[in-house]
Length: 334
Image 1: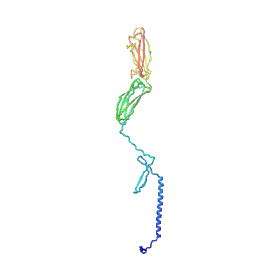
Image 2 (image 1 turned 90 degrees about the horizontal axis):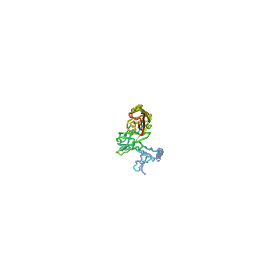
Image 3 (image 1 turned 45 degrees about the vertical axis):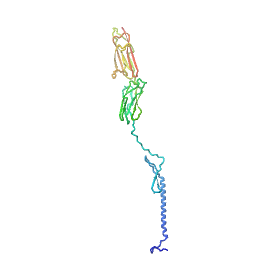
Image 4 (image 1 turned 30 degrees about the vertical axis):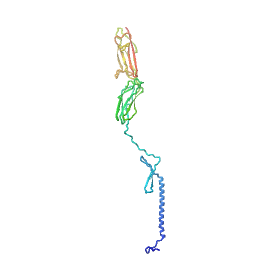
C-alpha cells in the first residue's frame, strides 16, 4: 500500500463529485452537433433555391462554381462546368482598308429629260470618283439602226481618267433630228481600274417629254395651179401673191425656190416675203402658225403663150422626210 502523498489535512476526492463535470461536457457537445446539423440543412435548402448567377457578355464563360478539397495538402481548387445552350457573342472584326474600292458615280444628267419641242442642245454629264483608286472611263453609244441616224449622240471627250475624290465630265451632243414620243435612248460609261478593282457599267439615258415635234408647210392662200394674164402692150405680167403657213408644232426651213422654169435654172420672177407675225430668231425658219405671204413679180421675157412656170417649196421636215409644194403658173394674152 502506497503512502498517501496528499498534504496532511487534505480530504480525498470523491468519485461522485467527478461525474457531473463529464456529463456537462457531453451535453455541450451534443448541442453543438445538433446546431451544426440544422445549419448544414439550412445551407443545402438555401443553395437549392438560389442557383449560381450566370455571367454574360462577349468575354464571359458561363460556369457553375464548385469547390473541392484535395486529399493531400488541404488547398481548395475550383472546377467549372459549361452550361449547355449558351453561345458566346462573337466579337466584331474590322474590314481590310487596304483593299481597293471602286465607286464611280454620275452626279449630273445620268437620265436626261428634255421637252420634245425644245432645241436639242448639248448637255454635260459629270462623273465623281468616290472610291479609293483611279478609274479609266469610256462612253459607249450603241448604234440604233432603226432610226435615220445610226448613233443618237456623240460624246466629247469619249475617254478619260478620274482620280479618287475628283470629278470628270463630257459633253453629249445629239444628232439632229431625233425622234421623240417617249422613246428612250441608251448609252453606258464603261469603267476599268489598274488596281484590279471592278465596277459595273453606269447606264445613261435620254428621252424627250411632251408631244412629238413635226412640221407641215401647207398653202394658206392662192392655188397650186394659176393662170395669169399678160398685158396687151406686151409688158411683164402684174405681180401676184400666195401664202404658206406651218400647220405643225415645230419650226422648219421651207426652202422656197423660184429659179426653176421648165426644169431649167433660169429665173422668171423675183420673190419677196412678208411674215406674220414677224420672226427674226432664225429668219429662215417658218414657225408654227406663222404665215408667209409671198409676192411673185414676173420679169421681162416671160412667155404669154401658156408656157408653165413653177415655184417650188421644198421642206426638210423635222420628221426626217422631205415634202414639196409645187406651184404652177401660166400666162396668156397677146
